[in-house]
Each structure stands twice: as structure tokens, then as C-alpha cells.
Image 1 (cartoon, rainbow, N blue to C red):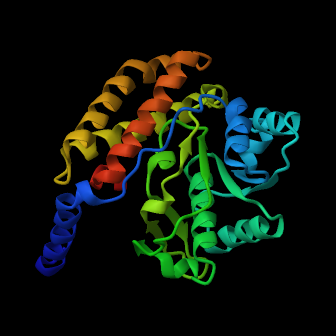
Image 2 (cartoon, one colour; image 1 turned 135 degrees about the vertical axis):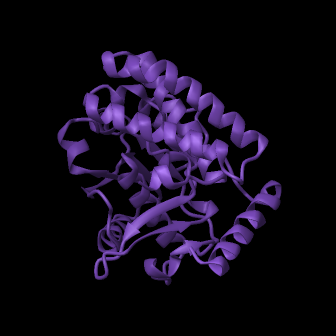
Length: 282
């Protein structure tokens, strides 16, 4: 990195660090402990038709069954977009957005790993800015308008996407991968339901758990930390050290799964207000 670019980057980081108390960060609400409680929220908010955004693997594994059965039981219509892939593209996000409009949805549920939740966020960004191309939202503070109510239901304990202000997309033509970063993209609710993580393979449990650990450590040691960032990071590290091996050794351990989900959430809250570094990039 040349000196000029480094100076710009450090100035940019200092700006967000200095004005942190004035910026509209939020921690997603975690009061909903199970997908079975979602209909109560919808009735309270007078919402009638969610768009569920997920991927084919999550769908084929039956992880979505509990949510779908709950919505059907409560006579709640919903639309399903299950075509998300790793590293979602602009074209894919646009298809989800078009389905949202076509089906006259009024809220979004991102169900799955980081790619599904990121796609849900981009749909929300497009609803907030329908006349703005996704490519033009690249960078920081390019949305600036309220998105539809969004629930994030992570099926892995690692990405932290349920707590961050970022959505990562890939340009179909250039294959360039970039992030849209803005405060309205932080989900309104993070539903940390351990039931949906019980069937995670051991390998995924381990790798996503280490991803969360990386988020927590790098958010703590970075130059843009604050008291609350460090607090969330430390709690996340303690939980991961205590419960990751338990979740790995005994995948049906609901307590360990629940604690890992919460650790991933805390790490996500920490690094969305701070930064990650080279290890995470690698």
C-alpha cells in the first residue's frame, strides 16, 4: 500500500472511530428465540407476506421445514427464493428482488449462511432504492433509506452476517467481489434458533466457529475499537473457547449450539463497529 492510500485509509478509519457515538449502529433484536415465535412478531407489526431467501442446500436438508410449517399453521402466506449460491451475484439478487415485488411481499427473512442473509439485505437495499443499480451501492453509505423489516436466521455459527451492516455481492461481468455497507442493512431481528444448526456437519461447525473467533479477535485488537466493541469481542471469545469443541464433539448439544450462535452474533456486532484484518481476509 503506498503512503497516500495508507494515509487515506487511516483517516477514514479515524473518522468512523471518532464519530462512533453519533453513528446509527444498532444491535439486532434477539428476543425471538425460535422460528415458532415469528408469527407473533408478524401480527404485532401487521405484516402479512414475507419473502424467505435461502439456498438449495438448506432447503434440501429440510432446515426450512420448521419455519414453513409454522407459517402455514398460522395461515401466513409467504414466497420462497431458494436459488442463493455462495458469493451471490448481482443478477441473482435482482431475481430475488423481482420476486419480492411480484408477490407483493412486505418483509424479508434471510435463512441460511452469510450468502443467503447478504442476498436478503440486497433485496432490502433495492426496495429502499428501487431506481439505483446494485453496482452503484458499492462502498459505504450508498443506501441511506429505511429497508423493509428484515429477519436474519443463521444456520451456521460463524459469518455474523445477522449482525453486520454489510452485504457482499459479485459483479456478473467482471467477477469483482465487493460490499455494500450501510446502517439500514443491519437486520432488525436475529433469530438465534439452535434447532436449525443441529444438522451442521462437523467440518462446517469447526470452520464457521473459527471464522467467528477470527472476527472477535480482530475486532478487539484493531485500531478502531471502543469499550462496547471490546466487551462483545471478549464475551464471544470466551463462549467459543468453551462451546466450540462441545458443539463439534456432540452436534446435538442444543446448549453448545445456542452459545455458539450467540458468540457468532456478538462477534458480528463487534466487527461491524470495528474492522477485521489480514487473517480474516486470508
